[in-house]
Image (cartoon, rainbow, N blue to C red; front, side, top):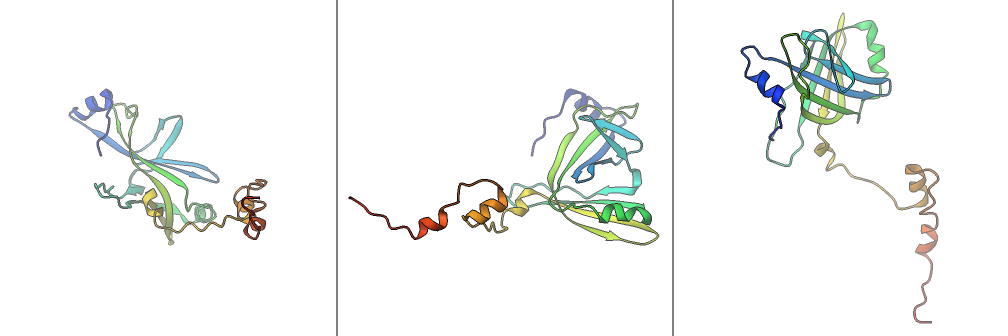
Length: 184
């Protein structure tokens, strides 16, 4: 997939020293998690990304011309065990996640408009517990959801479960047995 690069990014790529970073943004109930592969913090779109350095890793992002689901694994290691309760108590499955590739200038500030490399939803998390813990989040593209069955019943009860207060399907059960008289 081709990417549109800003003039500042193109200039930074021609420099003698290139300083790339990978940025991960996730939305959870407790708030936004924003981390990057460097050290310190950088700001993008009003969100401050905390640097995790060597404690974080994002797997290779695969792209193809096939219409097939792809995924990324984001790893955060070196978490003290006492902070695991914060992670375990979170509802993360199905939450939006974005991976950006950005460049830093010589002052280690982010060059505007990092490229969106992957967008998907968190599928599951593997947590390894020891003296220090590690978490591996599996992030799947939306195509992974393509073949999951959508079980919906066009009944009043199903409509209330999805949209409370909507009375659009209130009389569906009565209509199934209603005789229709034509031509009178």
